[in-house]
Length: 290
Image (cartoon, rainbow, N blue to C red; front, side, top):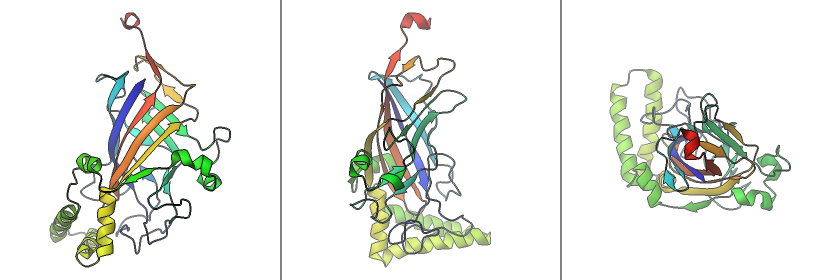
């Protein structure tokens, strides 16, 4: 078995409770657009964020960090350092508890995971709601408990693992430090659009001192860990023209995926993901590599 361990920061620009999930700007919830930004599109981005906010300007990017084969580290694997992406404009789906029955349960659709790039080495595969009906989407299946059950998540609050991965160990202090840094940037900002954007973010963070609900919402997202464990069962795509993988990837079997998402920062609209993609794999015999 080849296990590809990936992690990094992602971006998702979306409205949150009590705003409707399809609100284009964010009005009452802890997430909102600022001056100069396009309206929300709800797309989860592992790469190429849209108008990323300081200090996450150059932070977003999920990569394969390590690879193991049958438990043995493969530091020279062609997949180490490769970008990991979700294709097809995936979104979080909950619709203010219309699509799911419990708070913090969130379905991701579509789910099309890609490791690497088509011009080098790549593994890509979708998770389907029903392999006999590959064109189904969330709108077709959300009332079918049997189909959505495998894609449901579990939730942990104030997760130690998330805190260690993100470095956010004190939620309130993290937001206070961000407020101070934004106030300092506002003093030197000269562009009117940038000034207005900073003013909006500063106001939201200042509200922590007077609006307990807003503060708790921001801190709750920072500590939340949402965990998924399901199979990728769509048609697999393996690109390895130069045999850089050093073996053969199984394509008739499902690929296993376990991952958690957490540390979502409502000020920057970014969070952290860590996961493992497990694919059947048979290395080439040593003699054939010579």
